[in-house]
Image (cartoon, rainbow, N blue to C red; front, side, top):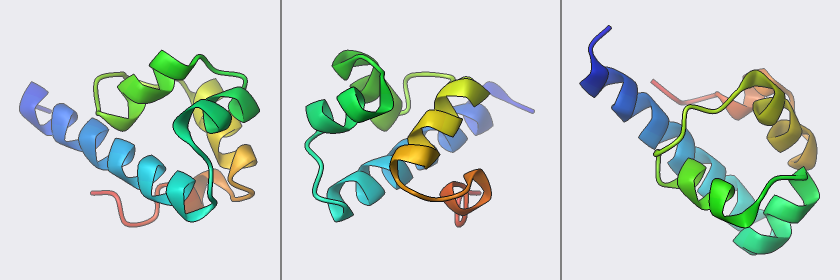
Length: 76
């Protein structure tokens, strides 16, 4: 897989997280706190600048009260 394709996936994932976070009424700082992640790290995720570990994906999904598969729904 090409690096450009990977960047596109990270960006899509970040947009998905931002959309779900806002739909739940969280500020980025509040959401990061609830996920036990740093605020700047969460910003990096939402901008598609981080390759997120499965552990952190699980934290994000749990905070959003959804399964990991639901979290990835619609991401190509």
